[in-house]
Amino acid sequence: MSRKLSDAAREEFLAQPHIGVLSVSSDDDRPPSALPTWYVYRPGGNIGIITRRDKRKSRLMRRAGKVSFSVQQTEVPYRYVTVEGTVVRQERATADELAGVGRRYLPADQIDSWIARELGGENPAGEPEYVEIRPDRWLTKDFS
Image 1 (cartoon, rainbow, N blue to C red):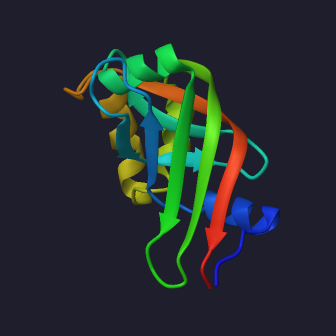
Image 2 (cartoon, rainbow, N blue to C red):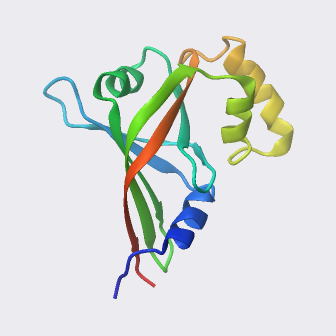
């Protein structure tokens, strides 16, 4: 039997370093863009992600202004949190913003070099952009 996560359980779950999937509507005949991504979240706040300025995902978010963001637990007991939200900020990423996201996924001894590569223009994928998403609606399930 499944049930909705409580607000506290939802906040705790989303604050853990899962991989999220960002989905944004397309601007052509292609289906919506849905891509896995690292994120940062502090309970009660907005979701922050890093993307690449002027890449398709960035352009689609700027145009649409709304996204869905989903995080799941793939082990039993299965759980998920999906956020329908509004893009409230989309700017060049700072070292602090990169560190906030990177700390969740990288070993501590790799953070500084990762930030230096990102901000030093050494990443062939392009300039890092920080996108902040305000949760407007929550969809959750707990299958425990």
